Length: 107
Image (tube, helix red, strand yellow):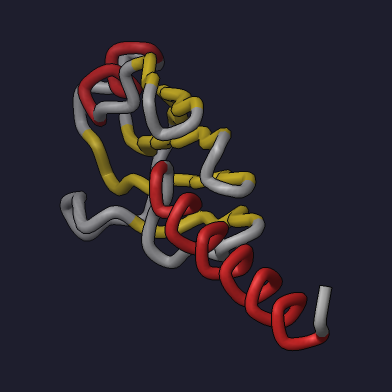
């Protein structure tokens, strides 16, 4: 195989990987690996809290997703009736496996 064909195959492989990793992503994301915690636009402005609870869902290959990562599920898990603020954490590996966890803080 000539060097031109090898480069073409390599570039095509990188492009294919980039397109495929779009299956289970979040913003911001890395094509190879993502592990970020971000704030959610929610709350009453108070940064004080007495309780903390989380809810999680998982995605496989961008084809199957299971779980309940809603704010309501997290609040119910921790018996939180007044949410002060929330954040979410995303872990994604090559777009094939992703976990999404929301954490609520409140009373």
